[in-house]
Length: 279
Ligand SMILES: [Zn+2]
Ligand SMILES: [Zn+2]
Image 1 (spheres, rainbow, N blue to C red):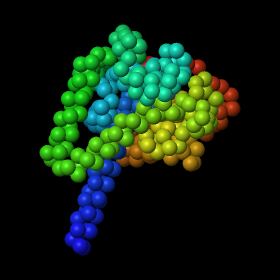
Image 2 (image 1 turned 120 degrees about the vertical axis):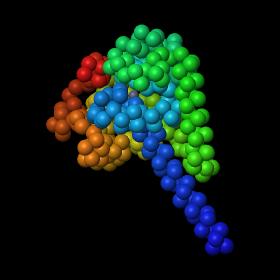
Image 3 (image 1 turned 180 degrees about the vertical axis):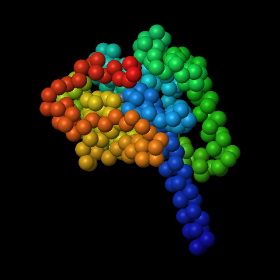
Image 4 (image 1 turned 90 degrees about the vertical axis):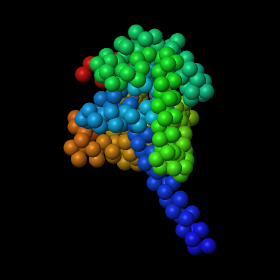
């Protein structure tokens, strides 16, 4: 009996440890790698760490980094207007997942390339695809299957099971940011932005802090999305840890005065959201 309890406890702890590892590696691959680092250039890291962070996003079936960044920059420029690739104004299912299957019609290769002149300089990132064709999706799928085969072979069924559960949560969390954090009945707004973006706590918990989405639309280049004391932002905590370790530099933070000014007056123009392209 004690032996059975011991083995159940050991299995549970092993599962929890693997789950936590994959939830952080793949989840922050999206939030730190694809989003705050590549798209918005909110901080800088050495090349090896940049690719390590980005790999976590790719291995969560997010498609190539160039594509992801091109779509997300378009979202900031056109939020909740006709050109927005995944606004819930065009339906919940559309904003949750249907938009992914229509991107080749919504953003041509030359439009995509105009969004990402900086990333097109990076041959390694470009190798994973520079347009919305189906081949880059197949390549990503193949890498994702291979990655999980390796997990099974090297670490066994418990690690694979933990990975699959973490992957499902991590895959849907940015889709839920798109579908929930632009809908009026959820959350609240600290900034009077020109879009419908909202801060939604339960999406922030699922998505390592990305649910503080109104803050992010107001100040897109900020490394910190949770602006209030209750807005827990694990991705920003990780950036601060990397900074303390000397791994992250040039971390962009709005000052308290800048935030007060932002809240009291303006709404950022859509051009303000042309983030990280020029520098
Ligand atoms: Zn948004
Ligand atoms: Zn963004």
